[in-house]
Every structure is written in structure tokens, then in C-alpha cells.
Image 1: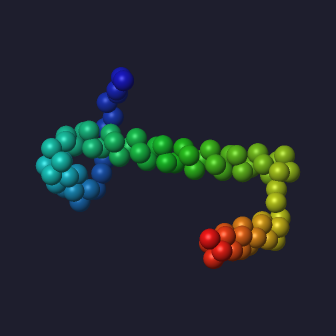
Image 2: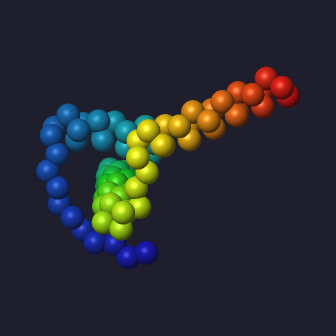
Image 3: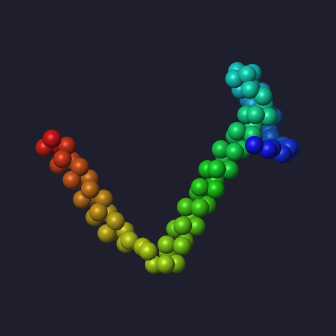
Length: 87
């Protein structure tokens, strides 16, 4: 995998914690920072994609009213409880 160099500014306490983590894990600060940025980017992109999917569902009128959704959940919970108590 290719990589690119980035320069970022972080508060001193974050820098110090990263240095402690680096020493404790025997990983470079650069490696740990890259891992943290990659995890953040993946998590945030997943959130954005979920929002976009939700907006597409709204636009396509693929909605379930709240009371219907709650009725379905209550029924599923009741069925699971009944299966647990009879089994």
C-alpha cells in the first residue's frame, strides 16, 4: 500500500499521550497516528453513508411510521421472551 506524508497539529497533551503510547506499544508515533486517522475516517464515512442511505429512503418514500416500527419491535421481543420461557 502506498502512503503519503501529512503534517498535522495536535495539542501538546495529545502529543505527549501519543509518545507514551508509542513507547508502550513499541510502535512509531507516525504508525499510531496513521492508524487513528484511518479508523476515524472509516467511522465517519460509514456515518455519512448511513445518512445518505436514509435520505435516499426518505426521497423514495421507503419509510415505516414510528408506531408501526415499535409494534414490530414489541412483537419480536414478546416472541423471543415466549420462546425463551417455553424452551
